[in-house]
Length: 431
Image (cartoon, rainbow, N blue to C red; front, top):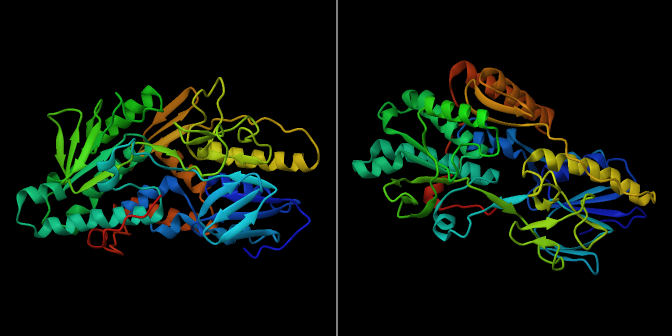
């Protein structure tokens, strides 16, 4: 890979998500050679992907070049590569562009969409884990609006204007709210020949409440906000199949004709082949790690973020697969790597829960901060501040803030562009 030989121990980081970025930032100017591998040349701020897919933001507002992250570290290197296999005996990483050795390996590959074995959903639904997928969804939504203006078939028109979202976690709730606001604020201005009342948004959830990980109060408030926006919520309902533009559910009386079926019902770890049996928990597809983030059976292989399953009494199913555990584990691991080369004992990781939040729409959000739960306009401003704070790059913060201010004042979405026709080319980017 044309990486120079050094006297410093080499740390190879696979993945430029929240965990990988946190780690690489904290290793800056430390006595390590850092090599970061990712199949894309940018970091994605995934919590705002839904805004790209619903025309609220352009993709460059939530993406940041990896090389720019590394520019202050003279002994840090990036290679755009797809990692294929780990040889832990030779301490060697096999990729599609070549091989690289490591002294310390950090797996920060995050998660991928989980279809729970439902092949019809995997083959026919659309999902949103990457920027290309978010752009596909944006194109699909806008293309369906365009087709609805010209079709003379009432059944086809119904399917084009039906939006069905599976999974009422933060992604599903935020997508539902964003599409509802698109219906309310943009359709009357852009599509005078579409009656907003003909557009239906269905949110399907297998459990008995929306936002299952959050408090009962926040869940109740979120459901109220969604219903105020006209989202039709179907609880205790599971998707069984999606074929021929029909979503069939566990409720025989409930099926939906739709050409926009969005799957946001779950994620699973994005593991890599090669580590020995016992390292990977197959059910979760996440690496079993100890309190130092070392993968089971290895001293020099670590996993952080969504891909790491650190089981404890407080977290019997591991830490939540969100940004904060990844950020905190990355920062903590940087300190432990430094302790390792200084022959000091490692310190266990302790997760500090900074709370959970979700936005539903304009002046509508919910926040859980320990025993404190609140919603409404104040929660919405807190949500905006937190997301602006954690966006990577000053320019991205300014551009996003400007877009949000513009949308708030004008009740508009500036990025409603069909950059590449999704339906015509049948594009579907892999996770």
